[in-house]
Amino acid sequence: MSVVIIFSKSYCPHSARAKSILVNKYTIVPAPYVVELDQHPMGQELQGLLAETTGRRTVPNVLVRGRSMGGGDETAALDEKGELAATLKEMGGKWITEVHQ
Image 1 (cartoon, rainbow, N blue to C red):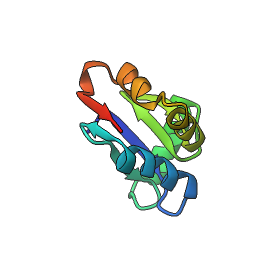
Image 2: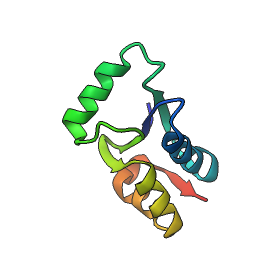
Image 3: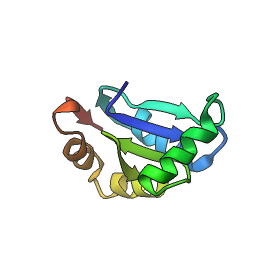
Image 4: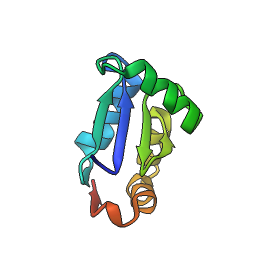
């Protein structure tokens, strides 16, 4: 597994935006792991568990070391402000070895 996990739905435009930023725009080591809840056999159960543990039922839900960093809007806002890499490094600690745009 990865330090960064993106809980997503394959058809969701907000999820696509967050995945595009985190997977395509940045190099993160180890690479983010994407869970498509609509394609996962336990997707509904996982989404319920995410709601309980993070307070967010919506997707995307970006977790860093098990803590929610937010969704698509939060990810995009951090990226636009130039704060995404620093936030990931801070939340990921020593488990994220590299983050750059």
